[in-house]
Image (cartoon, rainbow, N blue to C red; front, side, top):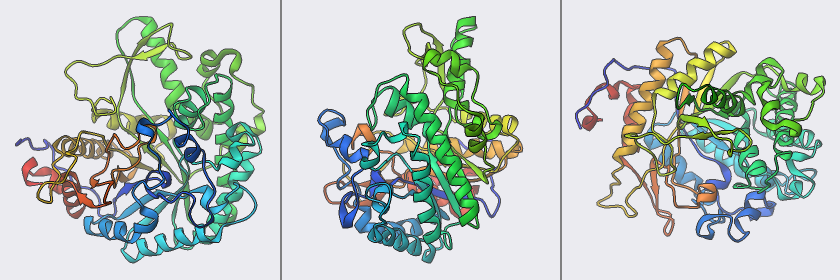
Length: 459
């Protein structure tokens, strides 16, 4: 393929190029050295919940192989690494006693990153709630906001001397939609009344934690949300209403409270009697000033009205002649530009990072002559990096880009069947092999994007 990018691409010298992972997806050893089980450990060990009965018990064995992985990051030229800390490693019961061995692990990881001149971005919650807290109601228990802030403060006191970028929550929409409304993710609830409560307590926890950071920390803190442009399937009014509901539910449910101190009015229409009336003091707590916003972008959604699709009354429409990933997501890089521009226009152009962007495609199951060819992922990254450049050219204050993911890993309810990594992992031997997409990304980092101005086969 000899397609070249049409306009010259070059990023600022201080643009942050990184990769992202999460604790349960790569670390393995979930109960090692005094750690407590999480809801994902329990979910995986419940028959029928995860494809092929897979678990994160070993995953990528990063808990023991982190130095090897940091060296791999250094070879790729990464300038930053976004990872999450496991709450249960730090507080096995989610409260009270601190597990020193868990803190020591993240201490060592951060020191190794800094020695390799890689800036850590630490996410405090990437879905692995301590099981002991879930026994007390999890995100349905109002007390959890304070519990989370207490855990965060432990991390700030230990690591803020070296960590300059903190994230409170990763994708709270997925936590509630998958874990409390549809039951396909841990903790596996299916309850229309539970989802809004979980949403609210997640946001209260975010607010409490930002307040705690203002007391304990010296650098920057934000939140990460997953966003999708919602496009109407037809010009019918019903499809327009479906788009409005889908957009409020996914794209505005978490950002409007943080930036405006209110929930979208459409949520009351979507949830009906299941939507509570929240006290103004809660919304004041949620509306904390953040230092940056992280955006996870994978696809867009074309929707149409469907009376059977509860609670949104909106369903996605498959697009003909479009490329789809192994997870059934349309490849639509222009939607990333659209998403970033919308944040600029609606929320006043806050400092942004694309904190996850990537794709699962079929990769060869074995390495051939030391190479893993993944041309679809290479093309995906080329298109989406061009899309963020277009957003910057249009005035978006975008400061960095993180590929999801560094490694093939445990992909939640998909188990190990979906590979997102730019580095291939043989899960039998734990051998790591950079794919062609890793080589492309290393070239992009080393040239600050200029490599994308060359024909594809030269990158």
